[in-house]
Length: 548
Image (tube, rainbow, N blue to C red):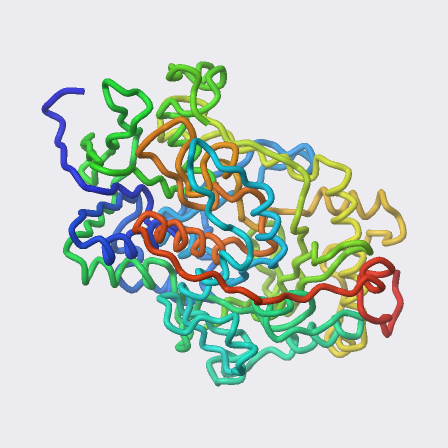
């Protein structure tokens, strides 16, 4: 590279100021006062470091999914054979705060058994000490991140909550009962009651002792009803307070720079600045990639990290062998779709409106129960098609390409129909929106509907997974001074929306980098059904109306 290329240096260079990058920028710049921290993001400063109603107002959440939005990368999948050949949108945040500025603000940590599974899935790599990703190892970091504004307080409840963290978390019930919503929808209560009438439990807190059941959703909004993105919670306070933190907006990473003598040592990043000029920033200690489950594997691959034959096909020479107030979602539910499961495999988001396709909202009264599976067996891929970072990568989730996944969604459809037909919905139930032709007793009829109507909930993960691509602390295997910290390094999906576990993951690895540690939460239990219930049926009682 020519010596005329503008160059600066920082101790730590963080790529991406999204859900994970904002956390790291805050924690490292606050704890390591003698170190300089630079965070690069392709998004505009004005989008989230200043007030923007399209982000701040929870009910405006679909605004940034529109094709005209500049805050969205507007990714798209290849045609999905399991979804009748349809392309599926994959929106990701192109804004300070990342996808925490675009998402539905649902705060779900996941089930305790997800993290017990993580700890058994992960192996140490290259003499890296193993971080504890079990439930007792992650709960303190969920609590560290959070300030809970729940109105339900008791010693038992508080054991699972944080009350001094940067991230505001408000319960949907409190928004309704606290007067933030002038006319709370009675449909939310009807959905919870219908779940109980269908034989399922109720729960006051999906993030506490029991995830299983129906109840109010936590969301990342402040008590005044404004979205609390990670830019608002972490990045803005750190940028205002810490002179050692530089936030470089409209700066897009092009590739990782490797040491001339040690081609596996990351020493900096080439990027395109806000003026369009190609520049570089050198990292005295680490380059930390926080570009998400699509952006992180793409940057690694355009930098020569990945499968050598695939990189060669994309026109890139591989290095050696390659190195591997209301968001309208105030209530929901988690249930087991069949006997034999220890924890829920189905999640509901209930909305008192209706969306057709991916974005079209009906202009009349309606309600929907969005249902999805939590542990799909289909496995997809993200890989580059050229060495140019501006060319979108190929995204192929391979939705519904296993028999298990189509059976699980078939079961979910039938269970949902039964819940909606319970007495609690009698005052509100009208004609079905698009299911009148479905024969609920016919597997093929239900499957046809599922394949033609299913869409993504926009929670990609596991594309640079711990144990196979990175260590338990996010260090890229076979490289030095290079780390990945975002949802891409999850070893498997957690049960629910992924923003909360991504923030937790960044909090935990930030402590590892700084050299501090929170004591593990010993003895915090979680609900599982007893053997009799688990093995014989998937619910605690019989439905008032037996539909299936």
